[in-house]
Amino acid sequence: MKGVLLLLLATGSFAMAGYTQQIGQKEVSRIIHTLAADDMEGRLPGTPGGNKAATFISDEFQKCGLQPLPGEESLLQSFTKYSLQPVSVTLKINGETKDWPVIPVGTARDINWESDSGYAVVHAKDPGTLMRVLKGNRLKKNTLVWLDPSMAGYLGGLSATFSEHFRDSEEEITMDTLAAGQKQVVLVFETEPVADTASWSIAVTREIRKQTFTNVAGMIKGSSKPDEYVVFSGHYDHLGILPAVAGDTIANGADDDASGTTAVIALANYFSGQHPARSLIFVAFTAEEMGGYGSTYFSRQLDPAKVVAMFNIEMIGKESRFGKNSAFITGFDKSDFGPILQRNLKGSVFQFHPDPYPEQDLFYRSDNATLAKLGVPAHTISTTQIDKDEFYHTVDDEVETLDITNITDIIKAIGVSAGSIVDGTDTPTRIKPDSSK
Image (cartoon, rainbow, N blue to C red):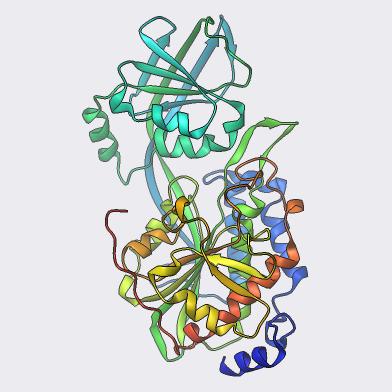
């Protein structure tokens, strides 16, 4: 590894270093096009498309020679969760049945509402308005919320977070139901404008169902420090099928996060021909968009004291605020993880920067969060301009909007900058544990 760094410093660029040539643009393009293809159907967990994506990633990991994690029999790390799922939904507006997305918020098993003065009605045109309504303990009436069409990309997250929230057991859901005392909220995606004077009725029946989720994870055992782990991760799930926009219903999730998953696969191949001192874990998480269930389960299987660092890779498909050959690191000031990476790239054209969006709290909004809360120097590497990305959580997040050359250069930079951590020379400082997050 040290010889590689000397070569980089001598050439002034990692892009032409022979050591990273196995991270090729053609291969990066192949992987990301496969993950973001229409036949993956948006990679929603539990769907044929989501399962197909997991199989593809597992096959790629096998080609790299990765071994299952301790205690696992395969590269597929499966776990079960429980939630309330609708078994029947009927929505009528002015007597006409509508096939629009309906999201009941709360723990009610049966909802039968008809428009009258006993219900409050709100039109939410933006997330801020919606979140104010969802503080249900402040509601004086059961409330119907018409969601503006611009909020289509939030439907999956709203269902997972507020309606079909997953628990570890059926008993937990039953206890939630018995404890429920707040007013109920029902969200309806307003495919067509609905007048305030319209009559409506909503009937929903839900029951407890279990769902199997699957991370894809494998490892390269370390040669001299096998009980010290370095994790490279990204989430492969996305939103699935959304209401049609110009005839397109598939949320391909090319940037979010096929780009990060592509990086994890490419890095597994990059390190597979080496003999790292520390054990390297490569994992593609499921259910990030539904509440981070995949990374939470994965993290619980590890002793955090043995995890030296986590490189979580999220949305690297486009040029960052700092231009090409750059990316930012969330939680930069919480450990010396970032400075180590910067130092390892000194003299090259690539630069890592601190997160330019601290107000977004991105450090605790991705799959690094669970381990970070436990003190692991677990950081997310990204380029997304989150404040102005017009394709985020839409059906237009497709490969054609991405810069494959830039993605390839970022992956090479991650591989090289991780060198001194992988070979045991550097150990990032621990993050102060934070149980409040």
